[in-house]
Length: 280
Image 1 (cartoon, rainbow, N blue to C red):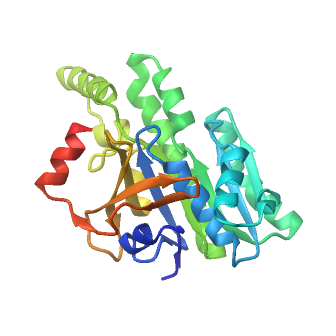
Image 2: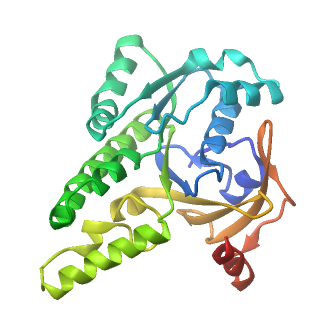
Image 3: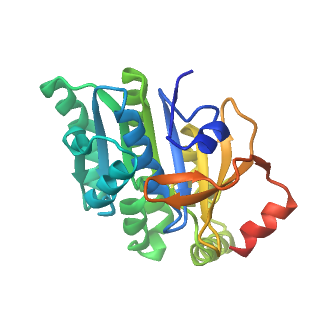
């Protein structure tokens, strides 16, 4: 089992050393909680000692070169890092699908590259956009079809991660209260109609508060949730790990160079932390 350091000591300690190579690592959380920051920090830290390229799929137009360069400068890392990044921006689920299933491997083969990480930020944006545009009467069938595409993409990413012994890092979102209410309402409608339907597959993941479906939580070997607190500090919760006890919590704070530990302690997810999470 090989770990890839995030560049944040307390996060690495929480996850047993960092992100897992040859595996899918899932990060999810609310807007502004720092999901992309952790990814950029990991890229910069990994670039210091390893030769190779980073494959980054931007589905939200959320990647900003200026932030990466700001972090590189703060961490005294060579700012030529952009020359080692293959950034693809897409505006549809079909484009996302083509990039993951075909284009990345074609680029690697044709240019003789050595991948260091495969990143999709976010994995669910185009899926979510297409799902919310579906007519209510076709919602369940649309969800099943779209989640089937996500499952296929996740499977391909896992194959790439294993083939090159690198991490695949996927970003998702936390289910909003409105989104959960919407799903509950649609479930109730279908139950009243006595429709035979796989509700778990048809609507979303069941165990975690993550958008993307049950398959995404099953295939991910690590699941890290981020929350932003009222004082703008963050919590990172390790919700799933194949080799570490869960759930565990650490406190983080943001700097120009990325995240550092707020107190360098790892906490049990007890009633005190659950109350804080609920209040956020």
